[in-house]
Length: 282
Ligand code: NAP
Image (tube, rainbow, N blue to C red; front, side):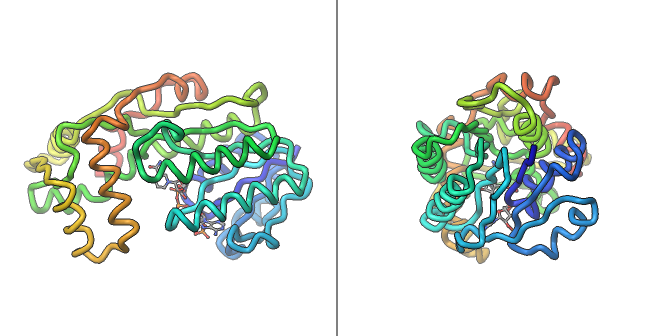
């Protein structure tokens, strides 16, 4: 069996490879990465490191691969759709037996702008005829940790989420689930909605961070327009500022609050909570 992971020099893909290596011999694991020098540690462990860039389809080498873990790329949406379709087409050409794709919560019904890319890729995979599994990943806990130290300095944590809740999830739990699905059987055609164990509000997040550090922290919610303007003023590329604002506004509307049991069933335990993630980060 050969399992190939794309995006293996990224955060989710890197963790998925680590979990794969806990389960199968390194000789059964391959990765496709843009920059092979970033995967030198994997090559040293005996992983087959292949150079490949989704933007240059001829570089994608999936020959001999049984199961492909296709990690969605980052960047502007219009570029990602073409990149991911090219990766699926390369998998078809190479005769890959199964594609496991990291999608997003409720990809085909979600009001989030970013869901369109994932819905389009899911559709392309289905149309390819290759057996598939979709891992519809919820927002990572980690998305909500990086800004906390700065917020704790100022005493306010600014969002555009109102009283909305998000059922966020540990990136590492998602990577573990990916490794389990990739190496396991009976997942063909499955669409897993992988969320955290509960939906929390940003008032709660501020209270948890305050509790952990002993510093006061208040959550302040502003309008989507003001939030976007702040991100642009801070120098974020417009596509990212718009993406982040869209997520926040949709959290405010309840779009990412549904808790589903799929992840706990796959990994055989309760997924990590936001409290655990905040404690570890702070
Ligand atoms: P990440 O650390 O940014 O990793 C993205 C990976 O995609 C990197 O390994 C990157 O390669 C690779 N990539 C980008 N463009 C590529 C191309 N043209 N050809 C081949 N590989 C390419 O993100 P992550 O945290 O691992 O998350 C994985 C994916 O989930 C993201 O790419 C994004 O689609 C999505 N995402 C989900 C959430 C969430 O909260 N659920 C949050 C952010 C992103 P390099 O290593 O060479 O840069």
